Image (cartoon, rainbow, N blue to C red; front, side, top):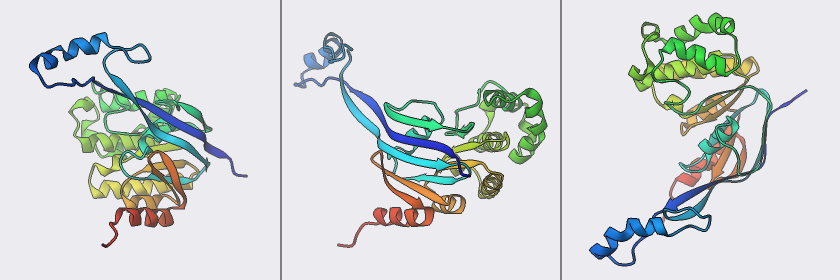
Length: 262
């Protein structure tokens, strides 16, 4: 019997962009006094420092993802893909609506998140495991497998602030994929690194899917989406415009990117 991994019910996400007040004249006096005016004028909410524009990163997003599904999130830059992943991973909350998560989440959203730069690779492996609620013994049993997959054994006791972006991604993906994730979230991270490691990562994701994990992948790489994900959700201006088999959704999306002949 199928069970849900994620359910989005009318999810909206609002951001407020602050704009500084602009002077009506270009005189030296007006330019020099602009900071003073920005301190003395107030927004409707009582704050100072400029006018605020409301930007909806997500609008009325609804979908269900079942346990064991592989789903790609695609769309142009700024479509809302990364915002949606951050809500699923509980980094931020929706402004309206509900997003229910029924599985333990392990996420790798962008280079630089999830690791403490001052700690060694070894320490970060244990730190990430503890965040997932794993006991030291469980992490220890997986440690050699994580390091072997990452191919950076000689640097495992070096602080990660000295890692190249490729080394960071190798270890971060290895940690995310090997610490028994039920729901794995990936946001464009495999765009960094060599082709050999990418193929190795794709094989690992297929292995996870076979074992019953759920994967949500954001990528601009059409091959990655169609190779890993059976289903894709296309976002445009924060809204779901298409949800279906990944090849069909990718084909439609690609057609919207191709300028029509005059």
